[in-house]
Image 1 (cartoon, chains in turn brown, yellow):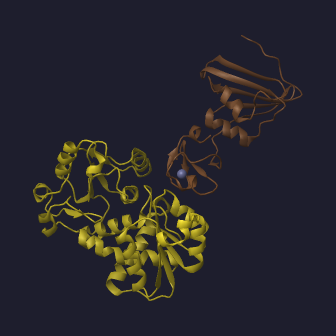
Image 2 (cartoon, chains in turn orange, yellow; image 1 turned 45 degrees about the vertical axis):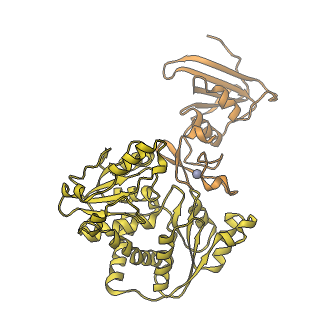
Image 3 (cartoon, each protein chain N blue to C red; image 1 turned 120 degrees about the horizontal axis):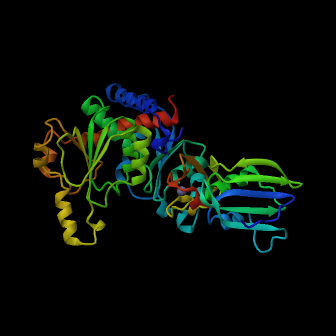
Length: 142
Length: 295
Ligand SMILES: [Zn+2]
């Protein structure tokens, strides 16, 4: 087992499906210019997932809204908010009921021609464009 | 009240519209003042004319917006065009090639917007006319065996019709050439939502059908011309096909039809597509009343 230093103030995201950790970091806007400590552990053995990724980010407290976007990439990730080296809050990322981001993947959708705010509504495990009414997987929208 | 998608309607609303259409056929309708505009960004003679006829029957005035001669050619956005039309009319009937255009129009306009077909998405008023016709001809809709026959993958009315029929608790048989089945997404949706019984077939077989709904198979859909010819012949409805069906089976078609139904079928008691076309006016009057509010 590789050990990684604890972080003092920031977020630990656990139970990310194996291989999706990098995508989670980029969704949170973390790139080579990020000034604080970041750890990405890939393919950690996991009972539940087989292989999981874990990310530790110093200096960012992921809120529920961002956590729910993470669920689009990897459902049921666990978010731990760390303050003064202690877990202050722990919650599971859930698929959001509504999404107001991105572009409709349907090339014939009117929203790709007019400057309109896109909106997708959750329908079972998928998202329906509220204009063209097509269904999409969450991951297609981000 | 807008009418954009069958997904916005419930059974009760549909029944109210049908009751109203029935009463309109029997007793006529109350005249009302108002102006509607028909904004067809794509041709559709029948949908447009029957809405114009419905509105004129009701005593309303009609403005026809013709995109070719408007400032659209100068590059005016769709949104701006809708805002402009909203100032001139009490209701907007719209047909547009892009999916979701009618929903966008409804979000922008203060007045009711009625969807006369948005791309490959919805055409709810045609579906209501079709279902009304079945109910009128058969005296009921629940439990009927409905066969949809032809190119079910490209027909504009298919999403709305499938959804509306599934809502009405019918049994569906889909008969199409391979590759021209309805969109799998909508089939999954209605199976989940309404537990609709659906059988897919690839050859004409109308043994159990109470209603046959014919949609044209276009040759342009096939790369192989010989194959196209064979399939077109196979998917043409002949009187001999009906001989093997129930004696009271009825045949519907959204029209215009070209050669997908033989002339003998036209003359038979089974053909109900001319009645279906005639139902467009009372049903669309009922829809205009529903959307614009009764006076
Ligand atoms: Zn869309």
